[in-house]
Amino acid sequence: MKRPLGIFDSGIGGLTVLKEIIRVLPEEDTIYLGDTARVPYGTKSPDTVIRYSLENARFLLKFEIKALVVACNTASAYALQRLSGEIAVPVIGVIMPGVKKAVEVTRNKKIGIIGTDGTVRSNAYTNAIKALAPDMSVFSKACPLFVPLAEEGWIDNEIAFLTARDYLSELRDKEIDTLVLGCTHYPLLRNVIAQVIGQEVSLIDSGQETAAEISKVLKERNLLDSNPHTEPSRKFFVTDSPERFIQVSKKFLGTTLDKVEKVDMMQYNIHNPAV
Ligand code: DGL
Image (cartoon, rainbow, N blue to C red; front, side):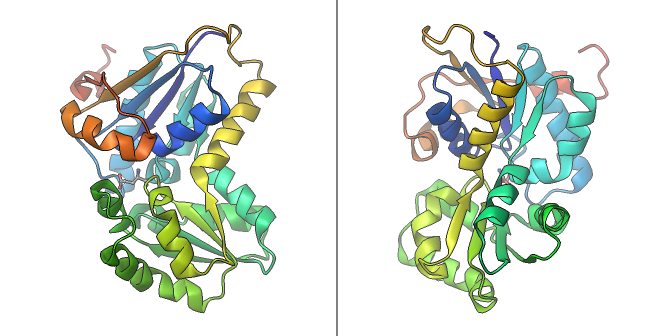
């Protein structure tokens, strides 16, 4: 089926998820929306994150997307249920794929979760793990400073190490053997996190797991690209000026973007019946 996948995130971090999607499903057309005018979601209330997520979905649905990927962990934590209830196409979030993998990988049944304040406060990861495997012990820690560090490219300097040591010492003491990177930005800090938490701890990249899940859902529903030999189309939209997004995109996606368009989310306000 030649319809695009729609992907949204609070900003630039979701490009780590898009990168994995492109690796697993290189032929698929993609439309990415980064809500850069309203980032961060990690410090916002559930109601606000739900409203922003519905508006982002409203924008992407205009492109006749065949599935919606919620690349943002915070939005997945708060808004996935609401989005799935209101949208006719499959909605795939980043939490459940990471949870399934963590439960599969752990040997000592002690799983650590790191994410934004919002993701940790929502208990979405803990609840999902407990629903799947009630005998697991789950320990969560919000690591908000990892987000600006990743965007600044401070991913292997002393400040990154000091920050990681401070955040992760609690989880080390709990003797977790599996750690879920429950935020779009954390894969960039993977090396620092691995060194600080210990190389014996398995790190789960929710973006990688999500890409595998999307591939499975598209196959099951017969939604894979029916004409895979044409060059895939990749569109990028942001809600604030594109300059910074373009500048930082290389760190997250691995390639520099040349065309990013700005969209005015006022038009997609959920209280606006005209859309
Ligand atoms: N994309 C967000 C997440 O994965 C991190 C940045 C933010 O707080 O908006 O939770």
